[in-house]
Length: 164
Image: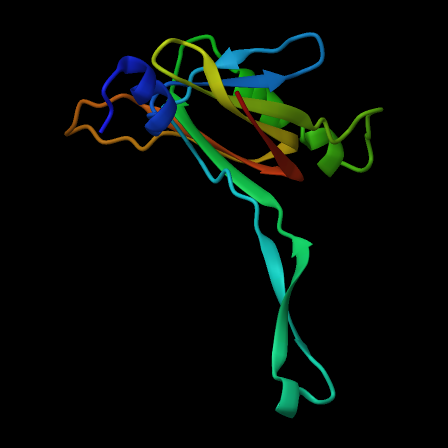
């Protein structure tokens, strides 16, 4: 059992409620508040390898290709904040092959930093080469009084994790 504040800071897990999301967009690096970020996982496809003598040796399970990363981020809708919509709309240049731009795919890196109670970044997930593939408007229900939540789904190539 922890006896001091230092023991708690070093020996206890970090709460997941204090985090910050930054999108690296050339000269602009907006920090965007999200209520929820899910899907930060790396996963390999599995390959079952059976040798010619598999009846005797059995089979081996080996890693195959790494799967694309699907990240979903949810946040409240803000007046005059169309950053996510503009990023999603920028994918049209890639989809429309008749009018390509010089950088049609417009990938961006996204940093998610987890902070401790003192405000120090303890863990950082750097999502590399993310593109938006889904932008979902909030659900509307006249019988409840809740914040309007929009979500964006990103697909990325890789995640780099660093500690401290």
